[in-house]
Image (cartoon, rainbow, N blue to C red):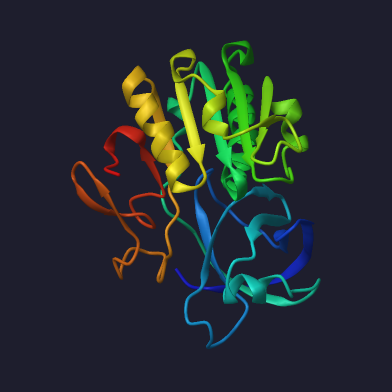
Length: 253
């Protein structure tokens, strides 16, 4: 697999420090998979891993937060600029196993991979001639202050519960305070590691199956450098190659 050169369709600031990047072209990928992106030749050395937020016929969408040199370079991209991508990479969510009543829990920029997951859950259910009445999806979305990217999910979920740390929107507090694992057949989560740890521990305690989309700093994105390992009950695993999606019960925090 090699990097391919594509062109920016749009790079829009949607909230404070949060950007939506759309790239023109034909792409593939499953919910939970990611691409490595770079718009520079030498510095910074590492590409940036970004989860697929959406896939359409003629473009791919990513959400990212500006936190360092690489993402500062990305946010300066304009329509028509060149960008290089490698992917899709990693192992995503197994849609066959996601049935019944599902809680999707996101923290901040963790909404990115779950956006594409939710859209695919509904489409997968319908395309496989199953009754969508058997699939119930509740979205628990947590943010610090500003809310973004959830309004387009309203037709695809049964309920949306918003939590902000500032109390500006929805309920004030932490998103983990607003859900009960025992009410669900599956819990799907992406966000800060402390949040996912709490969700995983609660699910193990209640006997609910959970799948977490992990985030790590990555160098190669293909599992060669071992720079993005996480601890599991069966030893260290590579987030980029073995994940980024893991079951909550296999992770060691």
